[in-house]
Image (tube, rainbow, N blue to C red; front, side):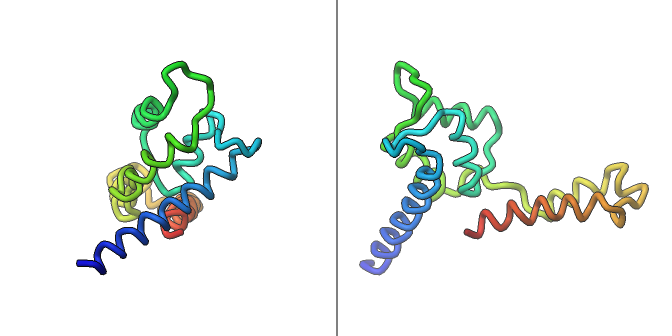
Length: 133
């Protein structure tokens, strides 16, 4: 039981460090705030791929009552910790995306062997690598 609690605390600490590091990249003035327009980039750099609607919902949760155009780290951290721990907004697996192409005109014309599939796989690989870090 104590091991589970320690493991959970370690996971939370590691997750929060990743969030802090990602946030710090965009905290240009070092005042624990980032421009609201950067939040989507921060969230995606942490391996989450929310839709635009989901991103707006997340922003509404962390914005001040009087929007300033900036997001405070103290408000962002708990929300983002919960998102990452609960594994929300994960990108679709490569398998699912490739299945979507099987029924498309790309597959029917056998363009899979063409230059488009390696480009798609490269893009998917970079997203997968982001998730693993």
